[in-house]
Image 1 (cartoon, rainbow, N blue to C red):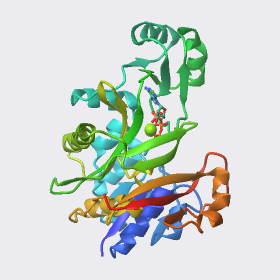
Image 2 (tube, rainbow, N blue to C red):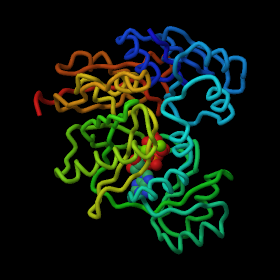
Image 3 (spheres, helix red, strand yellow):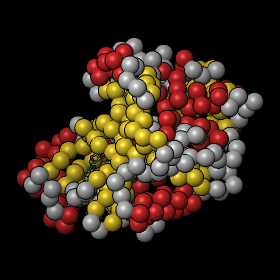
Image 4 (cartoon, protein in one colour):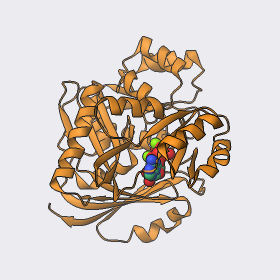
Length: 351
Ligand code: ATP
Ligand code: MG
Ligand code: MG
C-alpha cells in the first residue's frame, strides 16, 4: 500500500495514522519533538527539525503524498518538500490559513462575512482602527495563535496600549467583537475528483479559549444548516482543496460569520469517530490518498468532550460510562491546558 507522510506528530497525526492503518496504508511522521503521540501508531517516525534539509528530502522521497496536522510549517521546508513530493491539501490553503489577515481577506473575497478587521503594526494604527471598528474588540497575533493564545481583549479604547504590549511586537490584527448566539463548525472534505462531503455542523463551547465540547446536531434552523454546508463547499472549491477542512463559524442574527479555517482535521470533528461510518481522519486519508470519499452521514447524536490537563485523571471513571467512547493520546506528562484525550458520548441513535 501507499505511504502517507504526515508533518506533525501530535494527537491529530496519531488519529490520522490509525485511520490510515485501518485502510492498509502506512504513515511516516515527521516531527521535531521527541516521543510524539503519533509515534506509537505510525509505521515510521523521523525526529528532525524543519531546518534539516537532508531529513526533509529523505522524508519526501519515502512517501507517496505529504499531508500535515498543523498549519505553521516553515515556508522553506514546504518549498523543499514541494520540489520532491505532492502536498495535499495544497500550498495555497496553507498560505492563506497561516495568517489571519490573509485568511479574512480571502474569505471576504468569496463574499463571506467575517468580523470587521484591520492590520495592526503600532499604537497609532491600533487607535485609528479602534476608532473605526469600535470596542469591544480582540487583538490577535496574525500568525501562530491557537487555543486562544496570542489574543488580548479590549473592553474600551483605553486598553489599546496594554493589549498591544501582549502581542510582544508580533504583527497583529484587530477584530471587532462579534455578538453571536452560538459557535458552530463544519468539517468538510473534498476529494481529488472534486467531490465534496460535509459532516453535520457541530455546536462548540470554548472554556478559557480552548474547545471544551462539541455537540451534534447543532441547534440550527434548516436554512442555517444549509448555509453552513454551502459556504464550506464554496471555500473548498475556491482552494481546489484536497483533504479535510475545518470551518469555525459564529451564528448571528445577521447570518453566519466565519471566524477561521483550519486546513486539516479539526478538534471539533472528533465526534465523527463515533457518530459516522467514516470519520474525519479516514476521510482525510482517503482524500489525500486519492480514494473515493466515504459516507460521513451522522448516524447518532454525539457529545465530544475534551479531556484537558488533569481531566484525564478521571479516565477510568469515564471508561465505565455506557455509550461512551474514550480516546486517549498516550501523552505521559499531564500539563494544564494540554489536550490529553477526549470522550464521545453517544446521546441517541438515529437522526
Ligand atoms: P483555535 O484553537 O480554534 O485555533 P485560536 O487561538 O485560533 O483558536 P480563535 O478561534 O480566533 O482562536 O478564537 C478563540 C475563541 O475566541 C473563538 O472560538 C471565540 O469564542 C472567541 N472569539 C475569537 N474571535 C472573536 C470575535 N471576533 N468575536 C467574538 N468572539 C471571538
Ligand atoms: Mg485557530
Ligand atoms: Mg478557533
